[in-house]
Image (tube, rainbow, N blue to C red; front, side):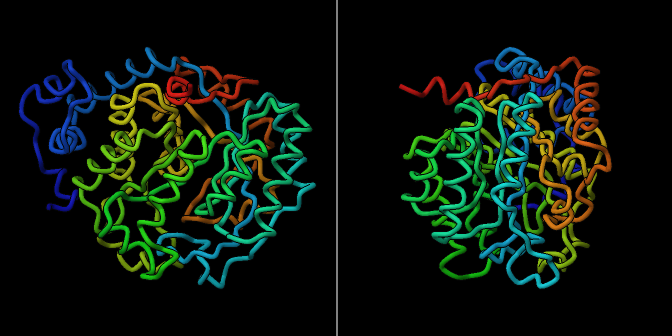
Length: 375
């Protein structure tokens, strides 16, 4: 397999994208997806125009908000790409108190957020499980069960997933990072808690429990090929996900993968490839929720808006208490706003209006795809 940094020299045959986008859609094989991921110029524009049309027809121009609460940067995992990995001794570790979390929940509720997303480093312990359970139960009481809650707290036991689901969590995001076993092994230590099979088992347990299940991948990793990314798209379709959060890989200087920084494709190419992943997934799965991730904004200021125009329909503004935000440092140059949350929201509203979109205030924005599957 060729590494995908070579693809900048490839030229698609005339009308290739036109042919691939002709009905019937969705019957693509990996080689078709590779060619779409390699599209340039007019072909790329045709892809984006088409995915934007598919998006409008299926999920419309409403963007759903998930107020992001970065609960804790304490993590038991040692993933080679992550800035808060266990072995990074230069991280100031924190865990937000229940009261501080509930203040953020209250802020979200009062400012029209239909949902929040609670994200943390990965911990498997009774204390952590009970903390999340308390937060979910208190959120239900505070908001009369009207505020949607997404969790992103890593691999847990089936019992823990069930406890959180029964306590009020609606959705769960567990990113696979890559669907290729060999590449996965290069991103993680070789031990029992970093197994690819364990990640797949956790995704299966989430689906079995009844969550709206989300996953996603990093785009532009060392050792990754365009064929890997095509397989990632097929994996998400075959697993029948309800939502997706994926974006460009951005290196962190205190991680093992930083040693490979000189072999990475340029940030701009990672950005464009991420947009194409969003566009193609929207065509493959027209009615799922797709997040425009913060990593896109790290590379281009209006990166999230670009993703929304061609397929994404979810945004996750950060509502973590400000004193903690600098410490949830997963990758370099993570955007941290100096404005108030109210000003950030106002500016976001304006930027979305400029591209013909609106915020779905007070709406949970559950996955239409999941709704169609529910009995």
